[in-house]
Length: 166
Image 1 (tube, rainbow, N blue to C red):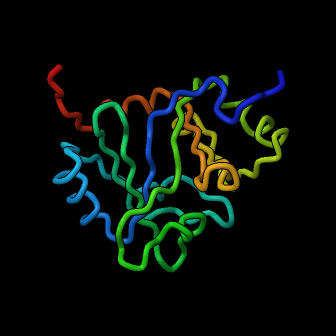
Image 2: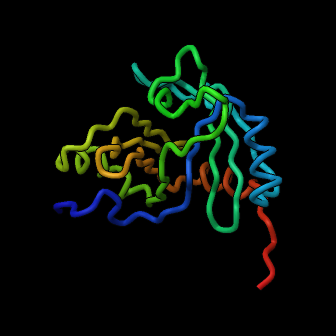
Image 3: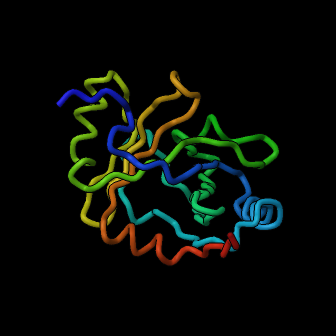
């Protein structure tokens, strides 16, 4: 099947930001944008291909239905996050995140290649299915594709959410 879009079959769910100061970024998102809280983790347990820095710290939270991901990479080895690190330590939008089912995720590497889009990072295990597509030429941002594995959905279920009155 010929893919007509980078995000065919995908659901937008996330804004991914890079910061030089995760604690300050979380405080800003809590106070200014009503993110009730963050789930913090370090993805050092996941292998990183050459050229892809493993972030030191990551925090994810929700502003309404949209997940906010804050990534604080190692400034000495920021990898594909380097271009989004601000000199003042503030946040900069780095990628848009999309969720796909696991079967669809398996097709993405081939389909990105057919579209001529580089993938500087891809990880596919039972626990985590994630890839970055370099769509900066199109949108100025990377595109992150995440497979809906049971482990990912369990992690997402533990993220604080605000209760918004209708």
